[in-house]
Length: 365
Image 1 (tube, one colour):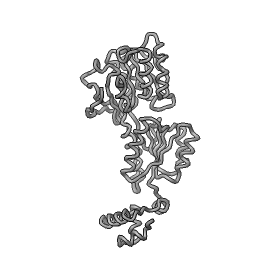
Image 2 (cartoon, rainbow, N blue to C red; image 1 turned 90 degrees about the horizontal axis):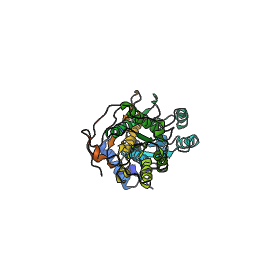
Image 3 (cartoon, rainbow, N blue to C red; image 1 turned 90 degrees about the vertical axis):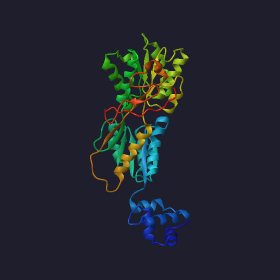
Image 4 (cartoon, one colour; image 1 turned 60 degrees about the horizontal axis):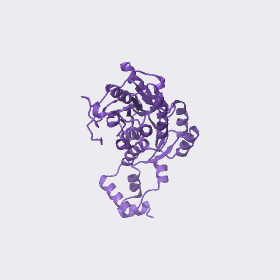
């Protein structure tokens, strides 16, 4: 393998100059840097990562800790994180903590000393002190925190606004008995989407009853199982808002098996707009979350905090807007309003609570 001495000799520069090029120390002209990198590429040279981190006190690796790594939602978030990191010359060390506090501790201990910063999704308030201790003295950015933490930047989803907008859309179709299949009780997204569902009903004085709030856990089987309780309600609701698209897949399957026609007998709406949603039968009306942008914005905030010489400033809490995507599962043929067209997303949240209009997109219908 080529060494730094080989690169310096071939490029006609000092070893110190090669070191400055690869350690991003500056003080090297653009021409010299290009020459050194060209020679290094030709000789297949790359500096030893461990030695480099000892010199710069940086690993150019960022940690990512998510509740789970399964499913289209998390894959979208990870893609946004990874594309943004690679564009800036960083790599990711990704782990999950779905098994509880012990696995959380184990994942963070394994990352300590190997990362320049950490992205964490939706930690419990009680666990933040432990995360801070296990992660070491590195910047932390939170995704979808349960509450705002003044000592950390965070990026969240406009869950309340998105759920409320979808319920309002169902109400605009004439539905007054709208059920919901909610997510896990301790999950921040699930709790906020339930709050949005309730707010939408409360706004127009529509029926709201605990019997219409069915439990789920964000998985397809839980949506499937919830339909038995849904169909046992008397009178039966005419619409159901499902707190994520994975559960909505199960709901649609169970309704089809029970001979309930969607949307003629019951309207169905979801949340997240996973790729599968447009290919279901019927295609699923849902609340779109830009999962890629959620990961990208979190990574950008983290890079800002990790950069040497970054100015001290108040930590920022950013809320990404959601938008409605109206397809056939809630009766879009009967549901076109002056504000929207079937298959066209329109804003349901914004920076904090300000609604913003999004560019029209084509959807399968």
